[in-house]
Amino acid sequence: MRQAIRALGWATKVFWIILIVLVITIAYSASLINIALGEPQTTATEQTVTISFPITIRNNGFYDIVDLNVTTFVADENSQTLARGTTITTLIRKGTEETQTHSITINITQILAQDVNLLFNDTTLMMFQQVSLNYANVVPFLVRANQSMPWGAPLSNFAVGQVTFRPYNITHSYADVQFSFENHNQYVPVTGTVRVRIYNNSGTRIGSGTTSIDAPPNTPFNGQLSILVRNPSAPTPTPSGEVHFYFDTSLFDYGPLVMHYG
Amino acid sequence: MANKFVRWLFPRVLKATIKTAIVLIVFLVVSQFLSPLEKVFPGAAGLIELYFVVYVVFIIVGELTKGTIYQYVLGIGRAFFFIGYSVYALNSGIITATVESITFTVNLQIFLMMIILIGMLDFAKNLMHIVNYLANKAETEQITVVTPEQEIPT
Image (cartoon, rainbow over all chains, first blue to last red; front, side):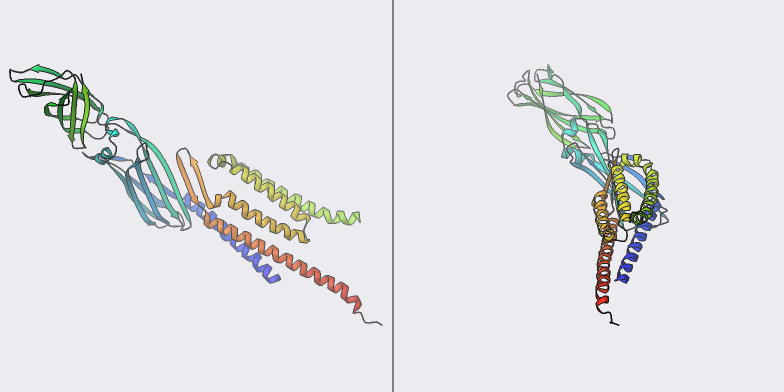
């Protein structure tokens, strides 16, 4: 009996020592890890925006870092995921340094296809960042952070002016359509064409035309389009009706955007 | 009789006082770090204070019951308190802290398992101490009762 009690006493002491040594060495070792985040680089193409930054981890501790996973995702205000980027490093051995470039590519075309409101309304997107790792194969660790990211609508404040008709000659007249918008997006230009169809108040198309648009980031755009309407064959223009806009840009195809005039 | 009781009590009270003083000094050192810790882990300071209070109670009662079966009963209670406290304080092994908009989560279940194992070993040790104590006591009583009857008449 006494020997069993002594054995249990020793086992308790040994486990205490293991626990204390493990806690102290892991805590001290973790404090020796240096993590450096490089300057974020933003690269914009016609359809995508890529945000990338280098992560350098110098593992000066006593234990390996296993399964390092850096994930970033962008979500709209309804928490719908719009873009996601993941960087995985399976092993960073003790005493070594590892540099990885973490990047997230936001496909503007895809985002706009998912949520049309982003075309016209400025909003705030949420960027969630998550870093998970397993330290010393014993302590899984997770860090989560989120930050807001302003989203500028490419067709913000889209408006159509009064459609005016002026005679061109006996057979034709012009329908002048004025429209304007502001490209609030800070990364991508709105470049392409707009097809415009004019309908009278009985819903009959009275003419159509196409014009090009070019609005660099953070700039307003004012467009004017004169559509030739053939008088004898054309339905009668009315002082009120609808204008349908069809956008064909490098970023997105959208239409019809129905605006009323008159 | 009173003298004997004082002689029995005095060293125990003295020992308990010295041990409590040492624990209080440790607590005073630890308490320096409680307010920054409280910002990261709300409620941690209260938990640590509770641990010190219970620890001091165990020291005092442990000293007063030394040499009796209650010492080991107290040991079992201490083992269970230690396990329960660890499970509660470590939030079942998943610790989460939030600093501004950054949330840290660390999984300490391996450590919790080790703590539970240590607690169970402590429990088993105290249980065996009780069995041993009762066995020794029964043996002593048997010897005390049996010996005079087995005495060879002269």
